[in-house]
Picture 1 (tube, one colour):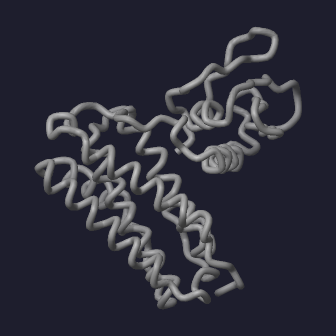
Picture 2 (cartoon, rainbow, N blue to C red):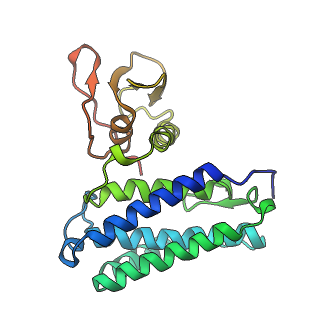
Length: 243
């Protein structure tokens, strides 16, 4: 099934920026540095790089589906996905860097070649959600920018474009909608007229104020680059894992 959907040019620009940021961080890490822990529990930086490379290939599968109409899953299954990440993390550093660049190049070529009419084709994410192929651009933007932060190299949320930070918070809002395992939290951006409610509506929300990058970092469970303030001087609630 296909609906009329425009090419997501702005998001593709953000993807180009995020890919460059991630690749630059990987390039400047030493071989030994790649073996050190990332900000993701249980994963080295090499695991993060291998994951981002395999995600590129998984998104190529979705673009192939959109272009051909032949169902092509992102991954064969969770065990295959985990195994490929472990295999990639064990590659020699130069091979791992090359693997990332080659995977990014494959994805770039598929995005550039996708016909206009295919952007509206429905595909299915690894979590089983049907989305138009135009969402692949955002799915990759989210991966490269957030995992650039997870490398713990030079990129922090302060380097992430503000509109990407806002879109990340929107993503978390959708994921946390109607969850009742934490008190509702209202995020208020200091430098923009934006409000977000995390969790189920109803009841008094804890108001957390900060700049957009810091709110995005908090919402996604990453290190916060700037100060956050809870209304009334209270404590800032701990949020459940996002992804």
